[in-house]
Length: 378
Image 1 (tube, rainbow, N blue to C red):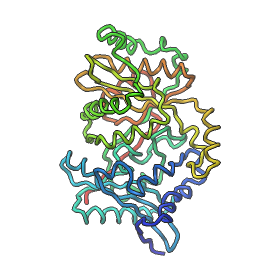
Image 2 (image 1 turned 45 degrees about the vertical axis):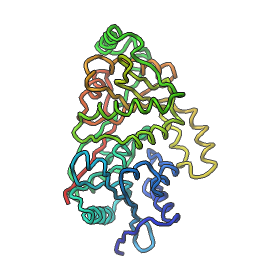
Image 3 (image 1 turned 180 degrees about the vertical axis):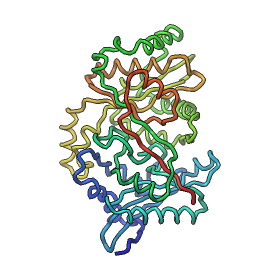
Image 4 (image 1 turned 30 degrees about the vertical axis):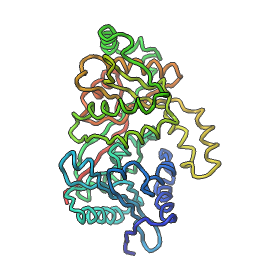
C-alpha cells in the first residue's frame, strides 16, 4: 500500500506519534524511552523552541497503520545568526528494514522546507540544536546516557542512501575510574600540574558550586559563557536565553549542585562544568513513565545508578590556557568519586571542539558512542 503523510492534530495523533517508538525499539535492550511530558511539550507547541522557531509533526501511514514519524521545523534564530535558509527534521522514527518509509518521510520534509523558501534540510535535531543531535553511527552495544539519543543502524544507512551528506559529528567519551584506582592523585600528571598552576595563579576560590537559592541569577550569568565558549565551533549558533532557561529548568529536579562547578575570575563567570547523575540507568526500566506504576519502578531503579555524566565544559576563549578546564575536571572527578560512581560519560562534544577533546584524550577517556548529523541541499 502507498505511504501517506498526515499532520499530528488530535490528542489521539499525539499519543500515536509518541507511542510509535515502542514498535521500532521492541526487543532493543539499549533503548531508553523519551518521557511523555517532554514530548507533549513539543507536540502541543509549548516547548521553548516555539518562542523563536516554528515546527510541525507528521505521521507516516500505510492505510490506517502508523509506520513512521517526523517533525519539520525552522529555527529562525539560528538562520538569522548564520545568514542561511535551513530547515530542520527531527523526531524521526521509521520501521526497520523498510527504506520506502524513510524516503517518504524525507520527501515530505524536503517539500515542506521548499514551500517555505528553505534551501537546505539538516538533522536530526528535536528541534533545539542540542536535543538528540544526530543518528547513532557507533556504540550500539550499550544504552545512551542522560541527554543522549539511541537510533537503529538503519537510520544512518538510509540517510546516506537518500543523498544526505555529513554535516558534523558529536562524540561521547567513557572514563572508568578504576583507571586511577578511584583517586585523583593517580590522574595523569600533566592534568594535575595544569590544575595546580591554575590554583596558584587564581586562588582556590576561583572554582565554586552554584547557589540554588540564586537560580535565576546563576542562569543569567552562565548563558553568555555558554554561547561565547562554543562560538568557535563552525556549526554553532547562540542558544536563546529562553531555551537556555528551559533546558536548565528541565535539569533542575535531578541536579546535584556538588557536580556543578563555576569558574569566576575577578567576580566574572568565565566557565562552568555540569555533571549529572546518569538517570538513564533508572529510566531504562521505567517505560517512559507512561503509567503510574512506572514511577515506582523508576524510584527503585534509582538505587542502581552507578555512573555520572559530564555534560558541559564551557570556558570563555579569553581564558583558554589558564588551566581552568583542568581544574574543573579534577574537582568534578573528586566529587564523582566521593559519591561512589564507578564510571563517567562525557557527552556530547563536537568532533571539532579543541579544548574538550584534547583534555578528554589526556585523561585517557575513550570514544564509545558517535552521532552524525546530516544535511542535503534542496
